[in-house]
Length: 325
Image (cartoon, rainbow, N blue to C red; front, side, top):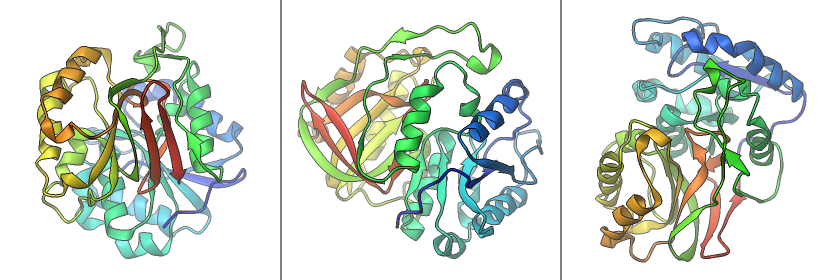
């Protein structure tokens, strides 16, 4: 089930299923994020609990659920955008009104910890959700052009689109200082295993996706393309064992291809190390794998549909085409 596309003039509701809008560094860019979305033609409204913050940088399950259910109940709201990620979205899974969400399909977009919500909602309702920029991402003044383009292609336009390499990328903590940024020329994607595949997209943030293992919220891996990424806390040995955990799933044989997002500098992952990790796993021998793609915790980032369809070609003329979104 594909939710309706966004149009100019639509209302976007901003909610906090993970951390609060009151995080100190968000205060630096919240006006920029709001104004950017308005300049794109949207009306931006906020859940009533977005500025609550407890000792965990979040708020109660009840208040987070209230804002999420209000957003899906409100007929004027056409898309739901998360403030930021965190660590606790999976607390909400048993409290979600999946019937309400199924009856009111609309875009849900965010990344990182929001992976738990996105894959659970897709699994329980069949509704496609979207891994892409948070609300705070739109406060980025220096690398928003690519992010905005892919947001529009995924969430506003019909027809297939390609996730092509950005010209340059950054791993700065940009919200602390918008002017002093460091950008690196994009070397392009890494083809770790050659081949081609087509399938349903599932995944996103790897360590969060793995929280769904053994639960009713984990999506089937049959005929899928796994999109996987992680943040700076995931060192190579962490990524290795988290990937291995996916390989141990009973239905991993249904995975047709893998796409991994760009690793942050502090993760200490290199092309050589990632290649070595992949080559130690016989389960991956015949699966096309493309890495260093523009999604995850660096900027800019592409948006893609969880539950949508993708076709990947992994060779010297690599391509990632989103077919259904």
